Length: 151
Image (cartoon, rainbow, N blue to C red; front, side, top):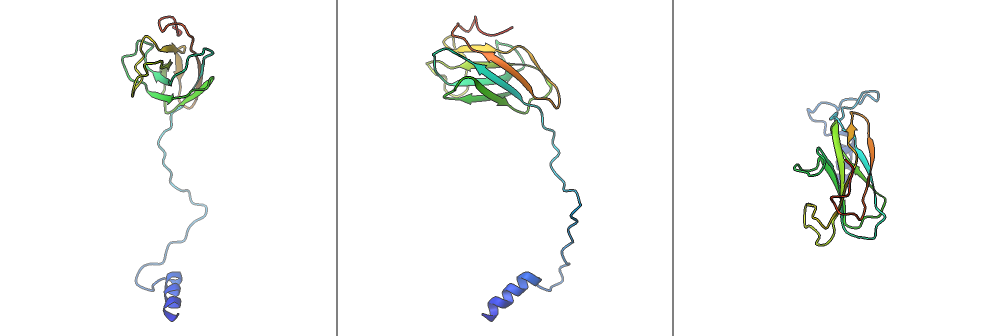
């Protein structure tokens, strides 16, 4: 029991070696934090009143379809409920389009590459500025991909 008491006392009081005493903590001192910039988000509401079902992919693109570059940010769900709200984060200031694709059978494995059977629509062009989130809407319809979307 004496060994346990001595061990507890040394933990509480310190070992008494040559280590300096711990520095006092200043309650008013500022604590350093990660100051990496955070970019705004795009909040996209996808509306669809049709009856077709399939996985949904929503992405922010630097170009309106046809797309030759990958999305800047994206969100996917296998079982969307409409209206579906996607929060697309860390978007640098610039001009973009939000594209929604309802992937119809045969479902594309991995990254969604829209096929002629898929429902696809784009938002109007949006502009993201520093410090401000942007909201937009995309309306999916049962029309073919060539007829869907805004210019």
